[in-house]
Image (cartoon, rainbow, N blue to C red; front, side, top):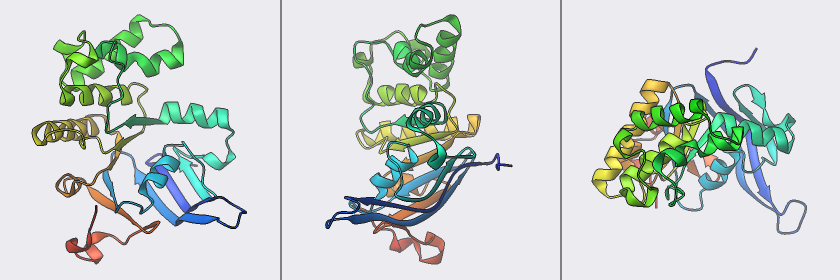
Length: 242
Protein backbone atom coordinates (compact mmCIF):
# COMPACT_ATOMS: atom_id res chain seq x y z
CA UNK A 1 0.00 0.00 0.00
CA UNK A 2 1.33 3.43 -1.00
CA UNK A 3 2.31 5.85 1.75
CA UNK A 4 -0.42 8.51 1.61
CA UNK A 5 1.93 11.08 3.14
CA UNK A 6 4.55 10.74 0.40
CA UNK A 7 3.74 13.05 -2.50
CA UNK A 8 6.94 12.52 -4.49
CA UNK A 9 9.71 9.95 -4.34
CA UNK A 10 12.80 9.70 -6.52
CA UNK A 11 15.04 6.65 -6.25
CA UNK A 12 18.36 6.55 -8.09
CA UNK A 13 17.13 8.92 -10.78
CA UNK A 14 19.60 9.67 -13.57
CA UNK A 15 19.16 11.78 -16.67
CA UNK A 16 21.40 11.57 -19.73
CA UNK A 17 21.27 13.31 -23.08
CA UNK A 18 22.43 12.04 -26.50
CA UNK A 19 22.10 8.50 -25.15
CA UNK A 20 24.08 5.96 -27.14
CA UNK A 21 26.09 8.56 -29.01
CA UNK A 22 29.76 9.51 -28.59
CA UNK A 23 28.65 12.76 -26.95
CA UNK A 24 26.35 11.17 -24.34
CA UNK A 25 26.40 13.14 -21.11
CA UNK A 26 24.79 12.33 -17.77
CA UNK A 27 23.40 15.46 -16.09
CA UNK A 28 21.77 13.91 -13.01
CA UNK A 29 23.50 11.13 -11.09
CA UNK A 30 21.45 8.89 -8.83
CA UNK A 31 19.07 11.42 -7.28
CA UNK A 32 17.23 10.25 -4.17
CA UNK A 33 14.56 12.62 -2.91
CA UNK A 34 11.28 12.41 -1.00
CA UNK A 35 8.69 15.14 -0.52
CA UNK A 36 6.01 14.66 2.11
CA UNK A 37 2.50 16.08 2.10
CA UNK A 38 2.40 19.63 3.42
CA UNK A 39 6.14 20.32 3.17
CA UNK A 40 7.42 23.73 2.05
CA UNK A 41 10.82 23.20 0.44
CA UNK A 42 13.39 25.31 -1.39
CA UNK A 43 15.37 23.85 -4.31
CA UNK A 44 18.66 25.66 -4.84
CA UNK A 45 21.91 25.22 -6.70
CA UNK A 46 24.38 27.04 -8.95
CA UNK A 47 23.63 27.60 -12.62
CA UNK A 48 24.38 24.39 -14.50
CA UNK A 49 23.97 22.23 -11.40
CA UNK A 50 21.09 20.23 -12.89
CA UNK A 51 18.23 21.71 -10.86
CA UNK A 52 16.28 22.76 -13.98
CA UNK A 53 16.62 19.25 -15.38
CA UNK A 54 15.46 17.85 -12.05
CA UNK A 55 12.47 20.21 -12.02
CA UNK A 56 11.49 19.08 -15.52
CA UNK A 57 11.56 15.45 -14.39
CA UNK A 58 9.51 16.15 -11.27
CA UNK A 59 7.03 18.15 -13.36
CA UNK A 60 6.68 15.17 -15.74
CA UNK A 61 7.87 17.30 -18.65
CA UNK A 62 10.67 14.80 -19.27
CA UNK A 63 11.47 11.24 -18.24
CA UNK A 64 14.45 9.84 -16.32
CA UNK A 65 17.01 7.73 -18.12
CA UNK A 66 17.31 5.49 -15.06
CA UNK A 67 15.68 5.17 -11.67
CA UNK A 68 12.14 5.49 -10.31
CA UNK A 69 9.98 8.60 -10.03
CA UNK A 70 6.79 8.03 -8.04
CA UNK A 71 4.03 10.64 -7.62
CA UNK A 72 1.21 9.96 -5.16
CA UNK A 73 2.02 6.27 -5.23
CA UNK A 74 2.13 5.97 -9.03
CA UNK A 75 5.37 4.82 -10.65
CA UNK A 76 5.64 7.12 -13.66
CA UNK A 77 7.90 4.65 -15.44
CA UNK A 78 4.87 2.39 -15.88
CA UNK A 79 2.69 5.10 -17.48
CA UNK A 80 2.28 5.97 -21.15
CA UNK A 81 2.27 9.56 -22.40
CA UNK A 82 -1.50 9.93 -22.07
CA UNK A 83 -1.46 8.77 -18.45
CA UNK A 84 1.54 11.01 -17.71
CA UNK A 85 -0.33 14.03 -19.07
CA UNK A 86 -3.36 13.21 -16.95
CA UNK A 87 -1.26 12.69 -13.81
CA UNK A 88 0.56 15.97 -14.39
CA UNK A 89 -2.73 17.84 -14.83
CA UNK A 90 -4.23 16.48 -11.63
CA UNK A 91 -1.30 16.12 -9.25
CA UNK A 92 1.03 19.01 -10.12
CA UNK A 93 0.46 22.75 -10.29
CA UNK A 94 2.99 25.13 -11.83
CA UNK A 95 3.93 28.70 -10.91
CA UNK A 96 6.55 30.34 -13.12
CA UNK A 97 8.83 33.36 -12.74
CA UNK A 98 6.88 35.07 -15.50
CA UNK A 99 3.27 34.44 -14.49
CA UNK A 100 2.24 33.37 -18.04
CA UNK A 101 -1.29 34.75 -17.68
CA UNK A 102 -3.47 35.44 -20.71
CA UNK A 103 -3.51 39.24 -20.76
CA UNK A 104 -6.88 39.56 -22.51
CA UNK A 105 -8.57 37.39 -19.86
CA UNK A 106 -9.70 38.46 -16.40
CA UNK A 107 -8.12 37.14 -13.23
CA UNK A 108 -11.13 34.84 -12.80
CA UNK A 109 -10.89 33.49 -16.35
CA UNK A 110 -7.16 32.83 -15.97
CA UNK A 111 -7.72 30.79 -12.81
CA UNK A 112 -10.42 28.80 -14.60
CA UNK A 113 -8.10 27.77 -17.48
CA UNK A 114 -6.92 24.41 -16.02
CA UNK A 115 -10.55 23.57 -15.24
CA UNK A 116 -11.56 24.38 -18.80
CA UNK A 117 -8.86 22.09 -20.14
CA UNK A 118 -10.38 19.31 -18.05
CA UNK A 119 -14.08 20.09 -18.64
CA UNK A 120 -14.16 22.04 -21.96
CA UNK A 121 -17.08 24.29 -20.97
CA UNK A 122 -17.41 26.58 -17.93
CA UNK A 123 -20.04 25.87 -15.32
CA UNK A 124 -21.14 27.26 -11.96
CA UNK A 125 -18.96 24.83 -10.01
CA UNK A 126 -15.83 25.90 -11.90
CA UNK A 127 -16.70 29.55 -11.44
CA UNK A 128 -17.18 29.04 -7.70
CA UNK A 129 -13.87 27.19 -7.45
CA UNK A 130 -11.99 30.01 -9.20
CA UNK A 131 -13.66 32.66 -7.03
CA UNK A 132 -12.78 30.73 -3.89
CA UNK A 133 -9.12 30.49 -4.91
CA UNK A 134 -8.90 34.18 -5.72
CA UNK A 135 -10.37 34.91 -2.29
CA UNK A 136 -7.72 32.63 -0.79
CA UNK A 137 -4.94 34.73 -2.36
CA UNK A 138 -6.63 38.00 -1.43
CA UNK A 139 -7.85 39.08 -4.86
CA UNK A 140 -11.65 38.96 -4.61
CA UNK A 141 -12.09 42.61 -5.53
CA UNK A 142 -9.84 42.23 -8.58
CA UNK A 143 -11.35 39.02 -9.98
CA UNK A 144 -12.92 40.80 -12.97
CA UNK A 145 -9.85 42.88 -13.81
CA UNK A 146 -7.94 41.99 -16.96
CA UNK A 147 -4.61 40.37 -16.17
CA UNK A 148 -2.61 43.17 -17.79
CA UNK A 149 -4.31 45.69 -15.49
CA UNK A 150 -2.94 44.00 -12.36
CA UNK A 151 0.37 44.69 -10.65
CA UNK A 152 3.20 42.17 -10.92
CA UNK A 153 2.56 40.87 -7.43
CA UNK A 154 -1.17 40.55 -8.10
CA UNK A 155 -0.50 38.70 -11.35
CA UNK A 156 1.73 36.25 -9.54
CA UNK A 157 -0.98 35.64 -6.94
CA UNK A 158 -3.40 34.91 -9.78
CA UNK A 159 -0.81 32.42 -11.08
CA UNK A 160 -0.70 30.74 -7.65
CA UNK A 161 -4.50 30.48 -7.64
CA UNK A 162 -4.40 29.01 -11.16
CA UNK A 163 -1.79 26.46 -10.05
CA UNK A 164 -4.17 25.35 -7.30
CA UNK A 165 -7.23 25.05 -9.56
CA UNK A 166 -7.07 21.26 -9.88
CA UNK A 167 -6.28 20.84 -6.16
CA UNK A 168 -2.85 19.31 -6.86
CA UNK A 169 -0.80 17.60 -4.18
CA UNK A 170 2.36 19.39 -5.34
CA UNK A 171 3.09 22.93 -6.53
CA UNK A 172 6.31 23.50 -8.45
CA UNK A 173 7.27 27.17 -8.28
CA UNK A 174 10.18 28.14 -10.53
CA UNK A 175 11.70 31.43 -9.29
CA UNK A 176 8.18 32.70 -8.46
CA UNK A 177 9.50 35.93 -6.90
CA UNK A 178 12.43 36.47 -9.26
CA UNK A 179 10.64 39.06 -11.38
CA UNK A 180 9.25 41.08 -8.46
CA UNK A 181 10.44 43.92 -6.25
CA UNK A 182 11.32 43.05 -2.67
CA UNK A 183 7.97 44.05 -1.15
CA UNK A 184 5.94 42.18 -3.78
CA UNK A 185 8.26 39.16 -3.48
CA UNK A 186 7.66 39.01 0.27
CA UNK A 187 3.89 39.28 -0.26
CA UNK A 188 3.87 36.45 -2.81
CA UNK A 189 6.11 34.26 -0.64
CA UNK A 190 3.89 34.85 2.40
CA UNK A 191 0.86 33.95 0.27
CA UNK A 192 2.44 30.64 -0.77
CA UNK A 193 3.18 29.83 2.87
CA UNK A 194 -0.42 30.68 3.76
CA UNK A 195 -1.76 28.35 1.05
CA UNK A 196 0.65 25.64 2.20
CA UNK A 197 -0.59 25.86 5.79
CA UNK A 198 -4.29 26.13 4.94
CA UNK A 199 -4.47 23.46 2.23
CA UNK A 200 -1.58 21.18 3.14
CA UNK A 201 -0.29 21.52 -0.43
CA UNK A 202 3.37 20.56 -0.85
CA UNK A 203 5.51 23.35 -2.34
CA UNK A 204 8.86 22.92 -4.07
CA UNK A 205 10.27 26.37 -4.77
CA UNK A 206 13.27 26.93 -7.03
CA UNK A 207 15.02 30.09 -5.89
CA UNK A 208 18.36 31.87 -5.90
CA UNK A 209 17.14 34.11 -3.08
CA UNK A 210 18.82 32.71 0.02
CA UNK A 211 16.75 34.85 2.39
CA UNK A 212 13.58 33.24 1.01
CA UNK A 213 15.15 29.78 0.89
CA UNK A 214 16.02 29.97 4.60
CA UNK A 215 12.35 30.71 5.38
CA UNK A 216 11.38 27.30 3.95
CA UNK A 217 11.12 24.18 6.11
CA UNK A 218 14.17 22.69 4.46
CA UNK A 219 16.55 23.32 1.58
CA UNK A 220 17.39 20.77 -1.11
CA UNK A 221 20.61 21.81 -2.83
CA UNK A 222 21.69 20.37 -6.16
CA UNK A 223 25.42 20.46 -6.94
CA UNK A 224 26.98 18.88 -10.02
CA UNK A 225 23.90 16.76 -10.69
CA UNK A 226 23.62 15.37 -7.18
CA UNK A 227 21.63 16.28 -4.07
CA UNK A 228 24.11 17.70 -1.57
CA UNK A 229 24.09 16.58 2.08
CA UNK A 230 21.79 18.61 4.35
CA UNK A 231 23.18 21.97 5.39
CA UNK A 232 23.12 20.98 9.05
CA UNK A 233 25.93 18.53 8.37
CA UNK A 234 28.03 21.04 6.41
CA UNK A 235 27.43 24.46 7.97
CA UNK A 236 25.21 27.15 6.49
CA UNK A 237 28.16 28.85 4.85
CA UNK A 238 28.49 25.99 2.37
CA UNK A 239 25.38 27.04 0.44
CA UNK A 240 26.35 28.94 -2.67
CA UNK A 241 24.22 29.95 -5.65
CA UNK A 242 24.70 32.13 -8.67
